[in-house]
Image (spheres, rainbow, N blue to C red):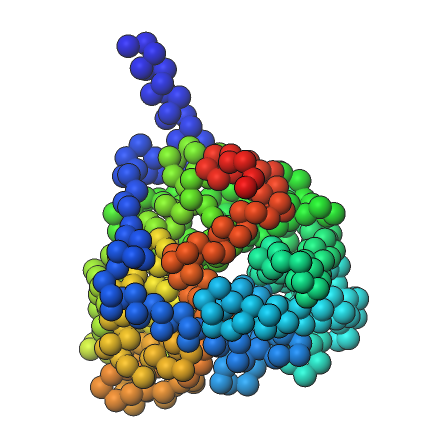
Length: 481
């Protein structure tokens, strides 16, 4: 009896130390169906979606520089994060046979060579980056800083995650693949994460050549787990392990729509880092205290958002099992409209989300929210994606798969800032966004074959970063194969 009491007190203490809510009553994870278990029509649909989404990066990235647009077909600046997703796409295309491996290697090498040679200095207008980090957006014609955007730590991390994946995947002895590996190592090694931590141990959001470091630091669960792992794993400019401890100190635990989990409202925060890191079965101290891993946590966030859409407290049109998913995406307009006697505040681009931390919802759904959640909950994500495809047809599903967003609640006569309103159906975006296309492609492939995860498990920098953050168990405990 005494031993049982001590064990109970110890479990409670661990639970409280990790954040509290939902620890003792956490339900066991549900086993999701494998790709081979899906009905034929769902597998065929994922085939189509993956190929179309790959073609966005293959056809719209510059074949000489490798620079990828932030959006298309609207003319836009280059997104350095989209380049990271493009570098992740090319090996997927090679594995799937969409393009020859040699062609994928040539495109990858051209991209890495361009990044290595691009000017890195503290000039406000004549640089692509500084200290091994890159500006958020670049001018397509020159590759130089776009207007006054910041040098972005997180967007650089998304780029370098793609760089490391490509460098690890292309492991054959050919000259091109050997050069890819060398270029990837060089790009990663020169990123100075210690310099990018002006209020160490926290990592800052970014830097401006005129005004210096931005005033904000990354803290609390969000899209930057990949940033912290890369910064911890650097062979040249690594931050200290305390950086991860300060990061998790800002965690918020709670319960929403029957799910107890680590909260962040937009689903992209539960998806981006999972593109490159296989969090299944590995845990840091915070997840250990709650009896979870980050993969299960993302599953719960996904299911909570689906339940929220089914409950539909905002009474938006179309919400339900076949239409759900709030994340950062385009939107129809910035205005307040009265619909059926209630006021709805619509937004253009916004980080929409639903969680116990906050709710921002104007009826705009992004297919990437369900698409990038396929590995977490395929039994609900795949049917939802297919339902969207069948219900809305070419208004939503086009040349490169799903356009960025839709909103069936937008009135027919409402003036919109982008996209168009289909009478009696709703608003549909005009554009594809690289940072939303990328997670759809990579996460579907991770669900189907685990390609990105298995490849990155072989990367010593990723493993070192995770171990310095305190992750243990699972594949980290296995001997290198």
